[in-house]
Image (spheres, rainbow, N blue to C red):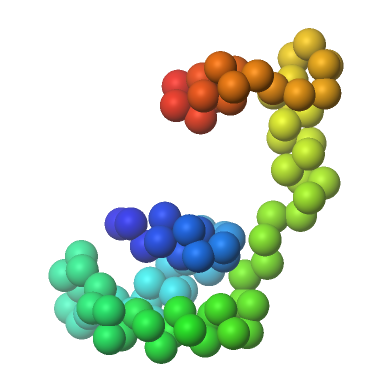
Length: 88
């Protein structure tokens, strides 16, 4: 269940469908809920080398932050960002 967090921490941003495909490649048969590093490393190495998952486009991120900037100041305060990331 943490595979998405791990993959995203490596700078890859797959869709949920792509994440499920990746999981199918590295998951044990029958599924145990665990992934062995020996199975994960070659698959993830290939993903990283091929740049299989594109990062979120800059304009999409900018639009997301603009939507959060209710006062249209052009920035979010630390407190606002912490609130959005932890509470909302």
